[in-house]
View 1 (cartoon, rainbow, N blue to C red):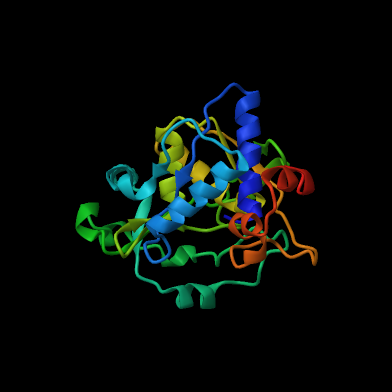
View 2 (view 1 turned 45 degrees about the vertical axis):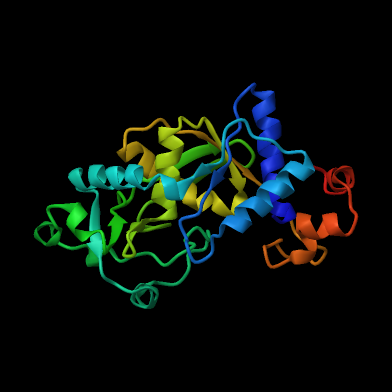
Length: 259
């Protein structure tokens, strides 16, 4: 657990306390190649050491796969998703120049590549070994009021395109899993880093399509090092474990980094 993530969780705890709410911690562990049990134990130890607490057991996404499959079926029934057999390289090659507003954090999937209705499998469960994309409503402006950053907006089909909701390794995408969890758990406010603002537009579309209430969003500014670079997991010198091993106390961290 590096300082940037710890600071975001600290903010979440303070906001939950101020609202007399319940704080949940979710373990996004769907990427099996990067997730190990010892990592979960390590970040839980780091957070507890810093004085952070949550009020329910850690929510683990890998234990919730039936919920994500059910959501995929609902999207399929509503004709909002389609299978995609294009590679990342093909999508990147077809993408136009980056937009000036910088909203497209991934190449925009060409709408011309959407398959005709007759080419979409009638039963989604028989094609879970394919990538599936959500068909965005081209030209529709998605808006929300961020509790930290203020008004946010993006135009579907221009600032972001059809996005993955299911991967060909039979795993839901980050966007689908987060949207389903936020809706099913009745989350009233999502607190996360400002680098995920773009994901909120996609997740809002999914929440609406699945009939869930929309949460509020608070996107915390990212922490940077002395050179202005964003803190990342590779910055081991700024991890809580490294700081603890150096003899730094939780109180010193809270004071120095304005937690």
